[in-house]
Image (cartoon, rainbow, N blue to C red; front, side, top):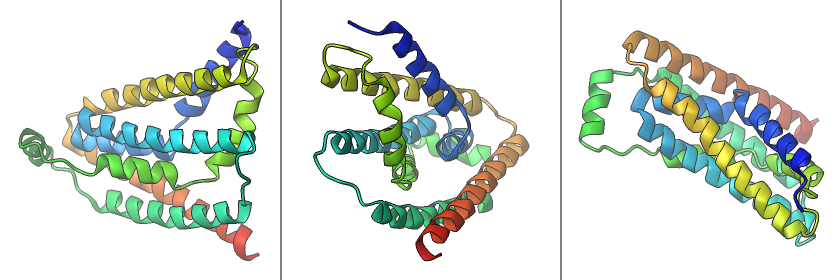
Length: 209
């Protein structure tokens, strides 16, 4: 019933897509290096929740439950880019003090890592268009029933998403050199800033020109 070749191709596609550093990966790295693996985990839960919402919306659109207004998505992406800009500036300005971070973690001070992960993940609703283009290629992964295919695709996505991003989180959470932590953190902020500026330019060009 399962097309093994198609399943393997799907898994490899996810590895290439999620393994390539992007805003979500950079955010997870930044949270992990500053506040440890727990912060990275909460960030991944937030980004994955956002992805699931976008995936379910894409499936609903493919099934004809409702239509999609591309201009509305562009406006949402435009606004989301400004949030990413605001967030990246905060990352760049923030100076990490490992001793204070350890004390905060010992005192169980909870930062809004889930919120940040979710907002960054959901801030580009044009991902819906990506999922609409991506998933139909693999809908025959279970030839007898497309609903089961969709479930399998989502489950595999979630498992791979957590595995890859938590791998990044675990690795970077082990860095304990304060100077290196600040260098990586500020570099992450600069990457997010560049992504935000590019998104603002691209979305603005689509909306106003």
